[in-house]
Image (cartoon, rainbow, N blue to C red; front, side, top):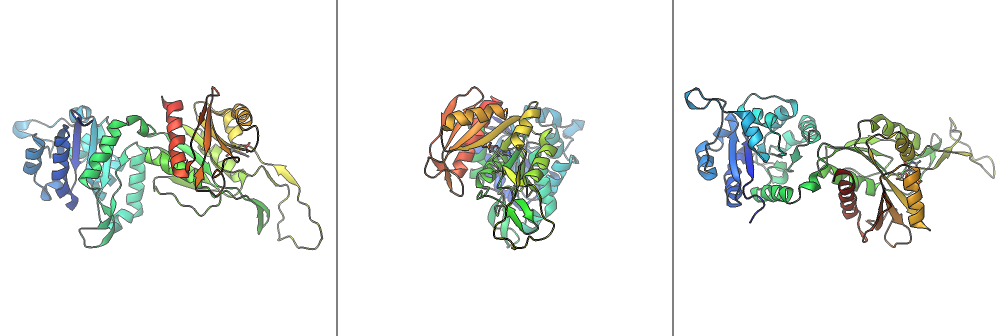
Length: 402
Ligand code: C5P
């Protein structure tokens, strides 16, 4: 039996050509045993008829506030009835209204009243999809905890090729089936997760710096994974060539440890979870020359002073935040990692051992061990960094949320 059996689902349809696909989507949901209440925006009725969807869903379809004989459609009741709401297709117009609290039709009023998880499947032409306002609206919706079912790249109704095709009904069905199968995996909904990534560059003069080999990959993978799980992600990163895969991630670019420290402290009070994956330089040149240093002498000495320990400084002032740090050790790994966990007042530490082949800087794979606050040790297998990012988020969900 499908996990969707008996689930109450509102399908919200807005006015785009992809609305024609909702007929098969309703059939799939009904076949899986779900109860489906279709609500259509007035514009969508030009693309597919309420009669078709009422027949397939075996329920009356709602399109407006007034029913027959002066009765009104109770959008608050509908919003409370549903176990899940899915807006598909979600047009640029409807996304903009959802993101900004407009409710000039029954569908939007129901969305605003809904207490259940809300999914949305954007569908529009590529230029509309690429427009910064659409991107911003999607980011906003995700920050409210709504979950995007990403649109696909391909042929669009305009004849152009690009991103903006609504996900196929089978894929949307799979996404919500996965959601019900494993609700806890999405539990980062509306949580603010701050992640540090990459190296820091410590300036010597206007053209030189002290840096390290960190590529930032681990931190970026964690950021992408957290965003996938519905978190509102701020990624504070040192110099790297990487980009995020999820536009909802707010990227703050910094150069030095001092700048990273400042950026972290600016967002810390509103953060729920902080993950320090950056390879922060421990020291910086005490004096930064104003001009390029000339090579006059045979020997040249740079005096270094200690950088602030960003995670430790957050650990010292934390209230409810869940703090995660990394440790890269070459000997007495577990003992050093435990003492770091305590000293920095962390809730979880991810230990990379350089003794493990495939772990560490610049490698696509990593082998880690988790140690939680109670010093329980969870060794993991060697995996791709993407898979390790998933494990890290799972472990955080287990330790923090459950
Ligand atoms: O003390 P150690 O450098 O081994 O600690 C590593 C952990 O602490 C990592 O999570 C790293 O991001 C963080 N860290 C930091 N600020 C520093 C040094 C390390 O936040 N100055």
